[in-house]
Each structure stands twice: as structure tokens, then as C-alpha cells.
Image (cartoon, rainbow, N blue to C red):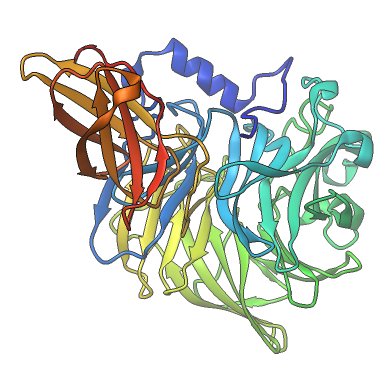
Length: 518
């Protein structure tokens, strides 16, 4: 199994660690309710789910963070509130299923995440196979790329500096990742010090198996095309930039995608802009969400503080993209609602046209950070609302058909992104079992679960007076993450077996002794 924590921290309290301590210190009634089980220590959030129409197949993928989160984990759940898999507790982000070399994998950032005024992280990108075993750790070290962090972090204890904002596997089986590098630079053009400090935004294309750098891009290297003055309206300098501890968080890269010709589509939160980056690193064009940049914005096509810009379709001079239009931040909030957008850009005419906007007119959301817009194969759209702990599915007409809420308010519990994706889990770990005695009824109650397994359909319960003489006492249909069976008699030993849809034995638990009275 993979390590739930590969980074050690000293000197500063990242948001995940702060949340864990807060959870231990405060009354549990302050937190969103969670589910518990007899056979497993898993404790996923109790999803508040509402449905108003048919939903697409697939599981919900999300991570949980924030001061009011019960457990900092990765979750795969159904849209009927059943847990499929929960990871060990750690500080994660950017969780989803992808394909690598033709095989399904799980990918996520594992490390530390720093809340505002930073809004970035340091860690590795992990790949797990369908048995939840770690197969690759993607990393970049300070020694390799001369990375610098804030002095409050002990740099000698940071193994890798990859950020949480992107971990996209390309059709070429490479991976696109982001990184934030604390760099000294001249900020006098926007009223800052000559010897100022910024959090430079970088992205890389890496070889997953070797960590070899295939492409590198830095926002600071291209100030001639994207000067600080283009951003200052949307991200005021304030008191930042004067020292290494509070660098000016300019640009703030939060997504990277790749065109068919090998160029890249990147999103800058604080420039409120989408850029096409050529293979030589130059900016091919800019779509600025308020002024248009190199495009003329059509009605309803404006955006700002956006996340998750994705290439949907390329044809000639026309490009369709999707994005998550936060329209809110820690600078401006509560004016324009958050939307998912489909935009068509025509590089020949210079027009940017709104194709479709996704929002719920009966539940206005002002998501100040994070978030994503995912297009499903059947035309449905899933939006993870980032700092607002909601996952919402829309049908192709833009009508909401499902909402799953996993926390209160905004920025108390959050998931960087959320997805709906197919997944088949085949864990190598054994099923879990718990049993207790119901003396009043002369029965033994047995609770069984198998974290991450998706293919078993039934359970068989074996009981006996000795470990060597167990016999089958019950067969029950799987009824969710945890299934309960009540078998006659006061069993001295209990074991359970998970069986597939065709009746084949898939795995057996250890043999246990039931606890006392239920």
C-alpha cells in the first residue's frame, strides 16, 4: 500500500494540519455529520443528496479538506450516499481516476497544502492501480529544479515540490503538473519593492516513470507578454511581495491542458485569463475574462478568478473550451454567481461566444476558490464547487438533476475538484468483519465490508465452535459498503467470504472471535 504521508512539516501549520487539530479541539457538533461502520474505521461524510431527474452512471470522486472536515481523505462514493473506498488520512488534492498505458489508475497530490494568502502546496503526484497499490510517484525536487519555498517551511524536509493544481495524464502517457516557486523579482512597476518576492507559477510536462522534464514553463519568464500591470486590477499587491514569507501571489496557475499540436492551454486565476502557450513558451493568444484580451467577448461570456479550463473540441480556427467560472475570490465575492461555461473561440474572427452556462437558479453559489466543470460522455456535466462543498450534476439542457452536499457554508469544508467517473476496484486486502453476540435472541450479528471492492455481490458467513470447523451459516446480498447478517446461535468464531456476481469466491476475511453483547 502507499504511504499516506510522505512529507514532514516544521515551522508552519498548513490548512490540513490546522483542520485536524481543530477537529480534535472543538465539539464534534460543529462538524458536518459523517457515517460510521462496525467493521471499518472509514468515516465518509453523510452526503445530503437531492435528485430531480436521471443521473449518469459512475462514482463520485472527491477529497475532503478544511477546518470543519471530519477526516482528510480521498473518497469514492455513489450518488446514493454509499461509500466505495476511503483512503488513509493525509493532506490530499486533485483526486480522480484516469488512464495510464491503457490501464485505469487513481491519481492525486499527496503532500501539504497552504491556505490563503498562499493557495499552493508541495508534494508528489501518486498513481495507484485498481487494487489501490502505489505504482508510481511523480516528483520534482529542489535540487533538480532550484525550487524555493517560504522560510516558515523546513525545505530540507520537503521531498517534492509539485503543486496540487494539476495532475493530468495526456494521451501520450505523460503528465502535466504545476509548481509554485518563491522568487525574488522587481515589483516597482506596480508599486512594490525593487527587490520584491513573488510566488512564480510554473508548469511541467513530465515522464511518469522517470520524472524526466519534457517541457517547462514559467510565468516570470514571459512578463514581456503578460506584465504585472495586466493583473494588478484583479489581485492587488497589498502588503505582499515585501519578503519571502508573504510573496505576491501573482498569476496563480490552476489548470493545464494540451492541444493536439503539442501547445498548451493554461488558466491564470489572478489574470482572469486563459492562455495558449506555444511549444517555444511564447503566448499564442490570451482570452481575458473581463476585456477579452485577443478576443471580443460575446454576451454572457465574461468570467474571472476561474479554474479548470479544458479543451473540448478543436476544428480549424474554432476551439470549444469549458471552464469553472468562480466569479468570486478572497478579493471580490457575493456579486456574480459561480457558473460552468462552454465557450467557443474563433481565432479567425477573434470572437469568444458563450455556448452554454451551467448554474442552478434556485441555489446561487459564490465559490471563492477551487472548483471544476467536467463533461461526461452522455452530455451531462458535473461541477465540483471547490470551496463550497457541493457536487452538482446537470443534464445536457443545463437543468440540475443531482446535488450532493458534504459540508456547510463556504471554505469550511472543501474539495479542490470533484468528478463522476467509472471505476472497478479490486483490492488485494482482505475483507473486514465485526461480530457481536445478541444473547436475547440467541443470534450472532455479523457486519462485513471490503474497502474499495466494487465487484462482489454477496457475502457468506461461516461460523463454528473452532477455527478449524467453520461451516456456512448464512448467505446475504451485499447491501452497501457494510452489510449485516444475523445468524442463529452464539458463534465462537466467525469468518466471511465475498462472492462475485457469478457466485465465485473472491476473498475471505480473517477468522475473528465475536465481541460481547451487541
